[in-house]
Image (cartoon, rainbow, N blue to C red; front, side):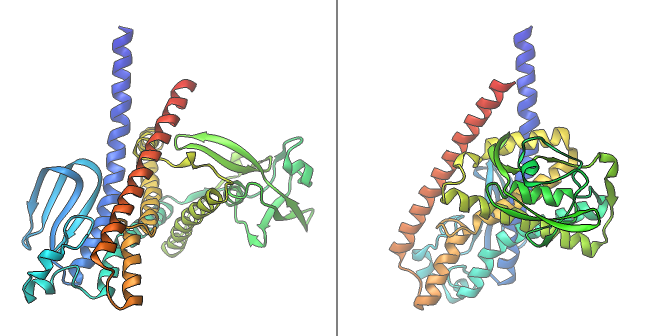
Length: 384
């Protein structure tokens, strides 16, 4: 009976993670590919297929323009195949292009001016950023958000804050000259500045004082892996001081842009620290980690939590696709930049080698992220 109960619980946990994960990933991929599709159609390019997933087709249909819309068996991505592409990665089919009639060349993706090709390629990541802004802004506009004053309620003994001179009742109004609106904004700045000296402007006894402090580096474990964050050692005000603040549509959109920018900035900060050896690559996560987080968010945060996760993942996928790696959108844009500088496209051989290198890099990244996911999953199971 215990075995059956354990198997039942495992199956429930599996489906409780997979279904939210597929929902989150499908929304993000659909919007990304729709960006490519819409701008391609706007530029007069023919579209052979719009696919969610890879591998064998499960079901699909043809629209009146001949585009095949399909859902495939491996739900880990998607693609739009334009006229003249050899595959869904928009690798040009030179043999087919050479035999095209003038009418076919007019609607072929590889024969379009470089500006149109660049616009079509960039439209996918741009659509992801727009989705994130809309979701962040929509959540704020519809539900408002709770804000706590950036006031110090207590200071932990022997902490960085205690040594720097923070006192209960201090109100933090700015960090490094940037105004701080609430405790959450202050927390975000501190956690992202481990080992970095910060100048805090503090209102104390109706006067402003400056306190310099360097947040200590601590490690916390999340479903995505181990994260190194900064910590001062001050506690937030009592929750009773939190106020629900409502914003109009314009301010909500500004906050949506700010939230999206925050994710981008934090990602580049992590990559910079990774390159300089101040961060570890064990924070990189793949489908298994995202599935775990999706299940936990669906369980604890409901629909609102999943909306926030979609926005976060949408920014991440949009940003990842802009990296200058052949096979990704950023790699295509890099090739187009060379084409503009040289006055002609790179040779077929150069592009082929580039795509192979890009494929190898993407596969290695996926395997490394999957290995991190397995290690994190094992650590999580040992701790339960």
